[in-house]
Length: 229
Image (cartoon, rainbow, N blue to C red; front, side):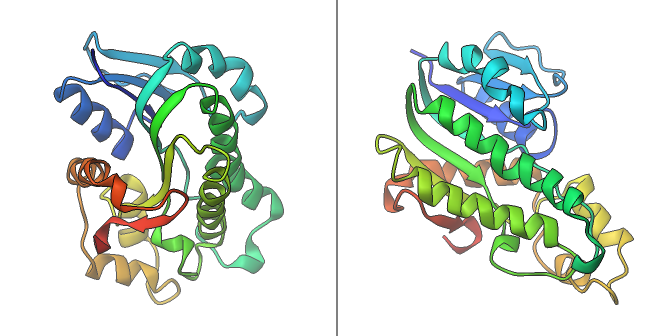
């Protein structure tokens, strides 16, 4: 029997790398994203949906997810960075847009997942959830929210192992923007990212799978930085 994987944000970046990685391993992958990636594999089942549409998540995605019935691992990967600018210039509307996708969309998905058997649930967090880099207000607040969301749901989803995982810096258009287009004199995080380790999405997918293989070492509800294990 094929193992089932569910991945959100599967059309690009880490989500796409995870999708291809598990398909190559012979898993059945269920993907959710706005756009369907160009993958021709009978074991890839895709649902087109914009997760920013929070109020429609349960209505539009419940049947798709509940029909899976049993899932080995869920990667709640979809998210957004938001605008890099100082807090005093960030509007509440801008903060809410990022928080809604990064936190509330995952809350709605977790509510659906409570109704089926799921072994492992990984929510993609970030070191920015612990470090308040200048300019990262929207993202940092939302990823701190992800960490607490995981902590709270671990007390309710007792039959699943649920973790908030910081995957490290991944080479994507988002990180390229931070590294190459921001003024590092105003936003020092741009220089910090350039000086640190930059991983490809494919390398990160392998590291996340390695984490899954030793997931029993971690307490459900906790934050894990894969650079430290």
